Length: 176
Image (cartoon, rainbow, N blue to C red):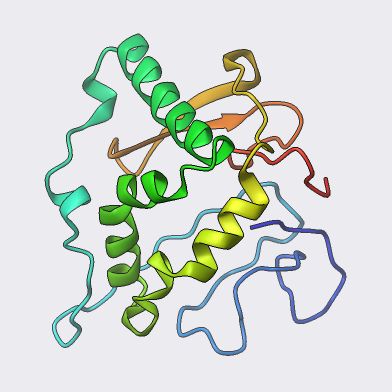
């Protein structure tokens, strides 16, 4: 998500594209002045709720913080290079197969079961093909830093200069 500074009164943290404070059931306490990063903890009573967070990827994953850092970095960079190559060379079906489980778990944890067909739709395939084929920047490891999140269950790489902290895979015709 891209956040821009805003002076709007209904944006307590001062950013566009943030939480809908009017309809949110969680009380978000804004800091007294703008900050680049904020964190707040909430406790939820789950007795009555059927939360869909028992996802396979979380349940059976290992603590990546315990892995050899260089081996993990090589694996993570290789994974994103594989995705980038599938996009660049127009192998959208291969990309969708590679991400079938991830897409299913996203639908579960976001309660998005009504859009189940969209993930493999012709519309999505054509959009990815038109946006990505022949249009992906190479992945140069000096432009990225590996980060580990979610109590060691998620590893990713983020850009360190241009597109700082943004998604790894970038199209050459982006509006930045």
